[in-house]
Each structure stands twice: as C-alpha cells, then as structure tokens.
Image (cartoon, rainbow, N blue to C red):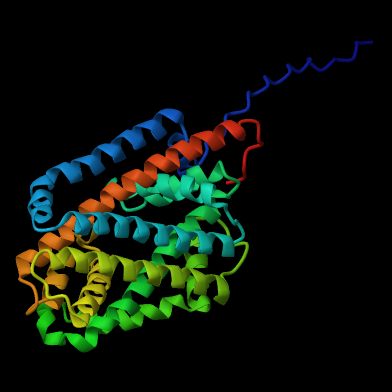
Length: 341
C-alpha cells in the first residue's frame, strides 16, 4: 500500500515594503516655502528689490524735493504713513469679519511683513507672506490669504468709487484711449456687495482647493473695511495734491478733487490693466490725462513717481516694525501647537 503524497510546503510570500506616498505638488511647494532658508531668501530678495526701486529713482526724488519746502516734504511722508495705516486697518477689519480679530501689534507684524511681497515679481507673494506670518499669530493660512484678497478687492472697488469724484470734472475725451476707465470704474463698485464678494471668495478658495470659507463676509465688516479704504484714498489724494503744489498745481478745491479722484482712478486703472506689471506706466498716463490743463504731463508723472518712492520707504518702515514684532511674537509662541493649514 503506497503512502499518501504530501503537498509541498508553500514558501511564504516576501513582504512588500510600503511605498512612501508622494505628496501632491502644491503641498510640496508650500512645504518648501515654509523652510527657514526660503523665508530668509525671500526677505533678502524683497528688501533688495524695494531698495533698488528707491535708488533707481533717486534723481527724480531729488528733483521733486528741490521744489518742495521742508514742511511739504514732512507732510508728504506723514500722509504716506497715514495712507498705509488706513490700508492696514481696512485689511484688519476684513480679517476680523472672517473670524480672526488681531490686536494692533499682531496686525502690524503680519501686514507690515507681507508688504515686502509686493516688490517680488509674481503678484501673489504678499498673500503668501501674510498667510505664513499670520499662522504664527493664530490665523489659519486659508483665512489669512482670503482676507488679503478681499482687502485688495475692497481697495479696488472703493478706489473706483473715489475715482468717480473726478468724473464730473474731466471729460471722457480727455482720457483718450483710457476713456474706458470712466465706464469701468462704477461697475467695479458692485464687488463691495457681500453676496458678490462671498461668491468670489468661495470660487477662489475652491480653485485653490482650500475648502469653503468658514464665515461669510457681512455688511458691517465690509462697511468698516470700505470706510478705512476710502479714508486711505482721501489721504493718498491729499499727499499727491501736496506734491503737485510744489510742481505748479494751483491750490484750489477743484485741483484737490482732481488729485484725489485722479489718483484713485489711475490706481484702479493700473490694477485692471493686468498686462502691465503693477500698473507700470498706466497710472502715470491716466493721471496726466485727468490733470491735463492744470499740471503739465511730465510733472504729473514725476508726482506719481515720487509718491511711489515715498510709499516704498513707508512700506520698508512698516516691514521693519512687522519683522521685529513677528520675531518677538515667535519667541512667545515657540511652544504653541501647529496650526491647521
């Protein structure tokens, strides 16, 4: 009788090592941006570009300063500080409306540092900087980015509204090829309606895959942001008017209205004309057209250039204060748990 055959023993299958999961490209980019070396490199690049902008136009700055008294120069600098301060308060009102109220020290730390991002090509680096610095102050990154984008939208819409002040004082024909600004400016004001702005914010976050906003914008919050933004435009217009007085502009109520409305209109046109980086050249052309007849064209361009240089110096001052406050806050919060993105 034959013995039963036994089945051969099966060899155990070799265990496969789990393959490391690759993070999506946006997550890897954000992780790289959050490294210490990249942050310091970004800071050095932004400071270099801002200082280069000031030094590149030092001759125009000296030429304009020669026509201004010491009191007018001081007024231009103080008005520049007030303008940026109003812009900061408008952004802070939006952030509070979205659910992250910040004390003034924290607001200066976040907003001041983020302003350096404006001088780095790309147009988004101030938003990225605000999100990263804001994370150290208890603000979720998505909310911080949304607040900065909304603040820009409020600034553009309120600038269009203030720019409408100049429309009864200047004909559309005087603007020449830029007459479309007259018709586009009032339409931009529609963005200030919370239903429209909430829809735009939700769309932007959905495209960026950051989820839906946790809290919608309210009429009260947008009203406070718009009020500070309008105040900023009035201050900026006054600064431009003081500059233009030293360049030959008659000191009348009409020229003050033209300077205020013209500056806001020119800034809005530069923002809407996306082909030109940072509105380069566009604002000078529009403002020269608005001030035609009361100020020579080259003088209007010089006034815009000097105003930009002064505001760049103000941005650097706010950035310095923001970096100091952010560093102090980082030491205090060194042991805090990480925030969600």
